[in-house]
Image (cartoon, rainbow, N blue to C red; front, side, top):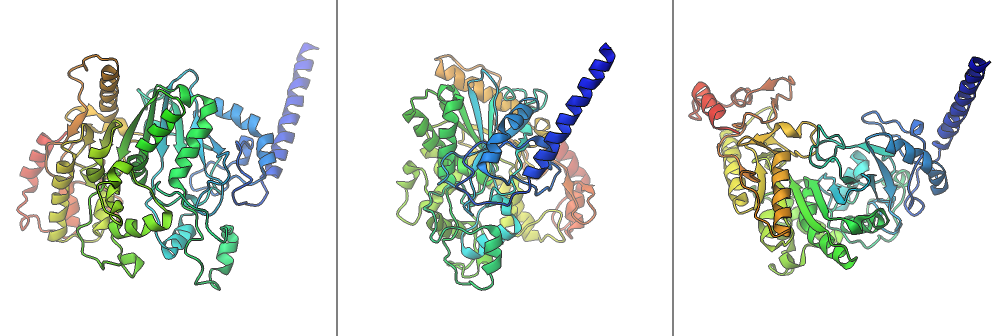
Length: 505
């Protein structure tokens, strides 16, 4: 009888699960909506969400349906290493298309350390560039297809073996959907943004639509995220680390002082610190039309000049005071902004950043490379290194790559025998010692600039991959494949390869 009773109980549980699963699938059919109704925690049960890479199934449904399933999603997130999606309570602060902005959160009970991460993804700065971005990368302008949960990697991982010093932290991932390098402050457009379907329907008939039909509120999104984290304990934090990659890294430079001021006004005693990964850009060397009449010909500087007006963008006050009106765009470059910052900053920067090279139309692993472009690559490494010499905390390997801190293998990259997680830990310990009036420990380095001069001279660099064959190549194999004559360049593959291997790291 006992066995039969247990069997019947299992059948009953199975029936309940199947019914819940059917109900959950049914609730996922609602249509996509714009912001204003999504200002709540979203929590459909996990079977609704397709978490496979490239999936576009997102959050649909009303706020009421989201609240009904919140308990299930909360319980599921607590049982995994996933961060869970929350929409902003202030529904007036939105993504570009008017859908609700938000953040992903993985709490660590009892921790008084918070890691906030700003996603990257360049920007748009005109109706043409924004329309193209909305068509091709809608997730960077709309929350309509965001998944309910997200798994962190690298410094966002909650696994101790992948993230030894920050796994036990409250981790917040803020998706980038404002296209303004996290600088925008609105206001909302007039007329209000249409849904994506509506925008596509009338794109052909309304070619002269108002260029301000998108909303740009990146800086306001950060402010609202901080507000929404107050009930979760951020006012009690000891350390708030604002981090980001690429445009998100530049967003850290623009917002860390503002975040520190906001927390101070809330009565928090937290020290705000910043980590900028691959957001320390240099000005373009290419000569372009000064007013870039064709959007494709705009340099990053021109794009930012135009964009700041469109976004109603803000830059740190101390930096803004250094430049006359109309020149505030210079504050988006770390080497011009750094001296005005008062909060501690750690810069992570590949010395041969691939995005910096793409600005100059240089694509490693592409079809061809001229001698002039090869010379530019070498000069870039020297100039980036020079711009970082006075930065107190830095990790800069001589590698061709872009972004580092969210790579799952981020522990494998080293400069002079020290990994990035180790360097960040040393910096962390030094700042804590200074706060407590102690002498920082010696032998724990966090100013790490690679000493070798060549791209890929660091043995721990990520591998170069030929775009056509997808094969891994050495630097010299890559240069030959891209049409360069090594002898004309004065390179000895054997001798220089031995030199690279002995000097790197």
